[in-house]
Every structure is written in structure tokens, then in C-alpha cells.
Length: 88
Image: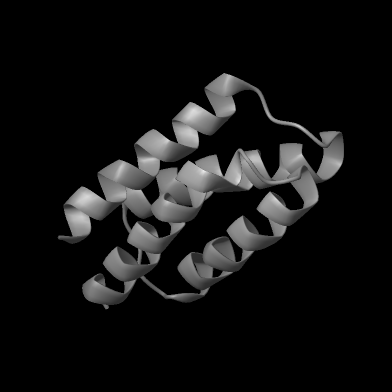
């Protein structure tokens, strides 16, 4: 299961790094897919909870406001990097 989370986190990180160039709606849609996979994995832990929370905040801002600030993007990236590092 740890490998699945690592794979999902790596893919989410790749998407995060390119998502800022996408329209908010499209970026939110892509990131929500990763969020749903993470949340349904059944894996628990501080890093996955942090990454899930940061990604949720980012997706919510993109969906509700049509934009997310730099701090929200950066926090999502940083927590995802931590999750990737823990999973590998």
C-alpha cells in the first residue's frame, strides 16, 4: 500500500508542478482525482493527512475562488514532497 501512495503522491506532485499553468477548473479537476485516490487508499499517517489537507485546501480555493494564492500552492507542493519522500 505504501508503494501505491508513493506512486499517487509522485503523480500528484508532477501534476501540481504543472497545474499552475492550467485554468483553475481544469487544475482542480486533475488534483481532485489524486485527492480521492489518497483518501480512499485506507493508508493513515501524519504525512498523508498533511498532504490530503493541503491538497484539499488548494482544490477548494481553485473551485470556490477560481484562484489559489502562492502560499496555498507552496504548502501543497511541500507536503506532497514529504509524502513522496516518506513513501520511498
